[in-house]
Structure formats: structure tokens, C-alpha cells
Image 1: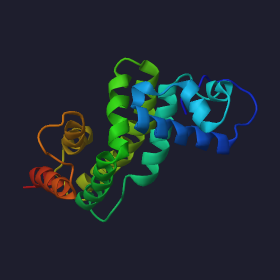
Image 2: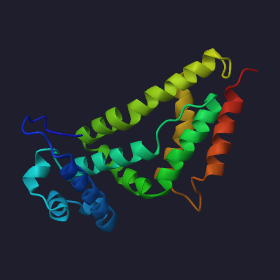
Image 3: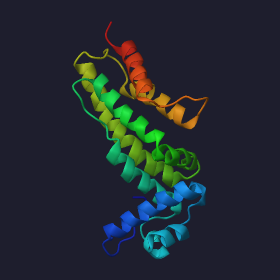
Image 4: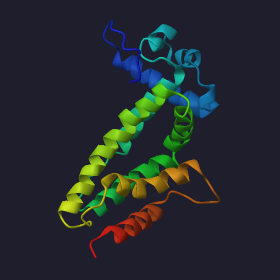
Amino acid sequence: MITHGKAGRPRDQRATGTILRAALALGEELGFDGVTIEGIAARAGVGKTTIYRRWPNAWAVVMDAFLEDVTRIAPVQDRATARESFIVSMKLVAKSFRGRHGKILRPLIGRAQIDENLRKAMTERWLMPRRQRSREIVRRAIGAGELRKGLEPDVVLDALYGPLYHRLLVPYGEVKLTDGYVESLVNMVFDGLEPR
């Protein structure tokens, strides 16, 4: 959670859940630029101070709501091979991007370019934990001979996930983040990375 770091009474998890759901609902109804602490408080039936004790601004609430939801439905998967692991994991991410998570993530990424706290939270709580698990999958694949020796795991991950973010953030034509696209992408990248 993006917080001020204040100590105090234990937080009511039900109130937190209600606040997070309210932030997402308002964001979908109004667009995320229209989400305010006042609006979230009114929708959740709590005082503004209840929210300000947990988050510094409305974007921080939206970020936590996004993270709680997307982490649950699109975790990094570990399968018998790295290729299978990434196909399954990336299909879950693509599915989440096709729905409301994509609608939330676009403005969050945009806002993170000018909000250092949001950028830090996004990096520390969304990107880096997923990247760490994914690096391990790549390293194991290199060790097992599934991928060539000498590959840089972060470059492999950029090659795999970069196109998903590109299609999310730079929409063009009727291009979709389909399961077929994910399979084609992973297979193309892996075909180029396997030992010759």
C-alpha cells in the first residue's frame, strides 16, 4: 500500500476492501482523472480521514486497488518448461489487459511518469516482484539447456513482455492481445533463443 507510514490503530480490512472497490468503480464510471478522495469516501461510506490515514492521494488508492486485483488473477506461473511458463503467465496478463485492468493500467502508467511515489510503488510492487520470479524461470531454462547460454534474463523478459505493453499503450487498428498473439509471440522469441 502507498502510505504516509504513520503509526496508529490497526486498519480495518473490510474498510480497506470497500475503499479499494469504490476507487475502481468510480474510475470505471468517471475515468481515473475524475477520481477524488472525496468521491471515494462518499462511495465507500467512510470519512476522508480514513482514506488519508492509508493513502496520500486518490491515485495511490487506485494503484493499490489495481495491484490487489491483478496480482490475484494474473500471477506468474511456473510450468515444466520456460516456454510453457511464459505462455500461461502471459495469457493471464493479456486477458487482464483486455479487461478492466488494461483500462486502469494505461492511466496509471501515464500518471507514474510525473508522480514519483506512484512510479516507485508500481516498480516495487508490480514490476519487480514479477520480474524476479520470471528471471528465475529464464535462469533455470538456461541451466537446463532450454535456452542458449549467455542470455541476459532482463533482455529476454523485455523481448517477451515489451510487446504486450506496446499493444496496451500504443493501440493501433484492430490489434488485440489475444491468446493466439501471446502464443505466437512466445514461440517466436523462444525460437530465436534456443540453442542452435
